[in-house]
Image 1 (cartoon, rainbow, N blue to C red):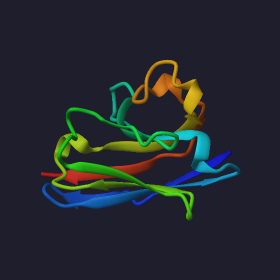
Image 2 (cartoon, one colour; image 1 turned 30 degrees about the vertical axis):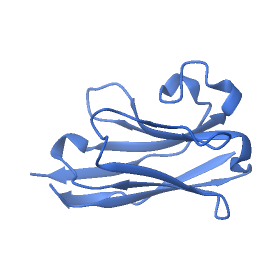
Image 3 (tube, rainbow, N blue to C red; image 1 turned 120 degrees about the horizontal axis):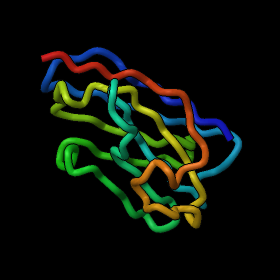
Image 4 (cartoon, helix red, strand yellow; image 1 turned 90 degrees about the vertical axis):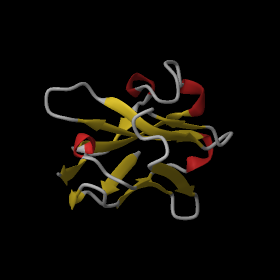
Amino acid sequence: VQLQASGGGLVQAGESLRLSCTASGFTFDDYAIGWFRQAPGKEREGVSCISSSDGRTYYADSVKGRFTISSDSAKNTVYLQMNILKPDDTAVYFCAATRTWGLEYGLGHPSSYNFWGQGTLVTVSS
């Protein structure tokens, strides 16, 4: 199982970015895929996640209405469209995956996820 995250960069507040997480070694059918972020000095937190088995989604309160998660099973890729970015969104963003029956701590909790990709840095300047 491998996850490749991409799409990070430096943007100004109010701008948009789209992150991509491409999976290999497995198909999405029985997996939940999540986006998490970690800012310096802070714990890793769930940003947005999607369960392929039932389409459930999770959004952190801080990103509701600004971020949208979507999945393209044909490309084995999950996207995170991030709009109206704020300086507080600055962090390393990681994508992760787990079997949908392994969501012991909930869809949006990092501890539920077994497989992690490398991070992609998102920097939002004010």
